[in-house]
Length: 315
Image 1 (cartoon, one colour):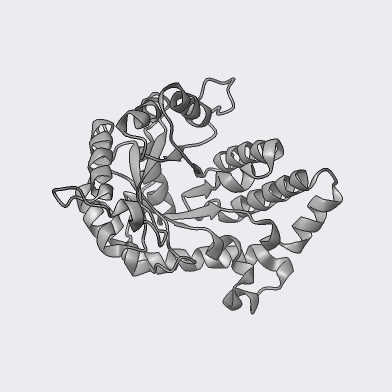
Image 2 (cartoon, helix red, strand yellow):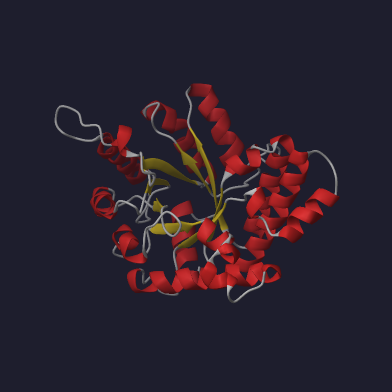
């Protein structure tokens, strides 16, 4: 199997865009028909929610497959539902891969020693018997326990030809509280993290332009996105912050490599809950929410097109 970075680049070229659709199901935002059906099927409140989250996510996948290269399920919303939610998450991720989409699981794991090894095996492993069973193509991880905590994830990613996205410069308003702290040389924490991530990416790239270790860099800080793209030339980027968090298409332009790939741009609420936005609600009734999702996806693809020219080479 080709490396994660090669599969990602091929998928971006095949679809002609870098859009990543975030699967962040929220119960109160689900279409009424899904909530009603999930409730009517019985079980505990958490089982009902898990059932609704799974149906909603599967139907989103059916809408965007073939249009975009990748989806990003947010594990937290499924974890909130307990065992039923975790089972639903694994089924959703497998369904996405069967639909031809790459899957980035947004779980932001990070721990020490054997605990990190267990997390890595659970999400990245592909031994046939464990819960992972190749359920994801990539996983988001947290670097703030130190470099040694990343290594088990890197080892697993290399072994199973998966990818990682390390938090470097996140898109939330309070990111600078820790990430902007400077050492005596005036180097910020996020810059130290970027240097480490680029080293790991370079060490895992083989003949590919990019390694299997990527970085999460928010579009809400476009100047820093440019800085970090230059500092991490061999690092695939996951760029959140587009859409509901306020970043525009021009803000993500600096994230792409000279080959027109090297990054995916995530949008969650602005796509999956497009039926709630005025511009789509005026065109589509609540029962036509999937058409609103498709329209919002096409709109994002069109908005990004002037800034990302990946070509259309087949995988």
